Image 1 (cartoon, one colour):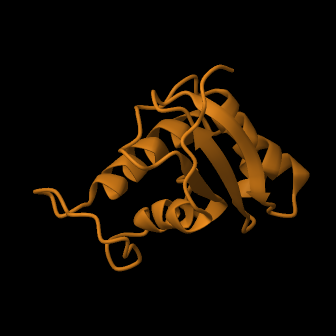
Image 2 (cartoon, helix red, strand yellow):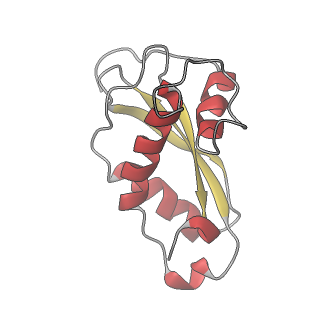
Length: 129
């Protein structure tokens, strides 16, 4: 892959993950938009939707509680520079399905200024399947 990713702190990456939980959980201080969401929250929602559309895992795993976290480093234009399993669910098949969701996404929208890393939480009970 080409280019140099813009690196931010783990704190900012965790903040992006928390933005998915809503304004009460996210306290990075970014100004909210007219919808009441910060730029990070809006971006987190978009990324969550794009990646989760690609996410497939065996239906039998949906009956069990699994949570995994994938961390990704992004290029300035939204290309995924690198991704890795940051927190395992304890089930290799479930973890592989989370990683495959990122592999199947070719590009994300360009991230907001100052953001180049994110942590996406995959929760089997929130999958809707």
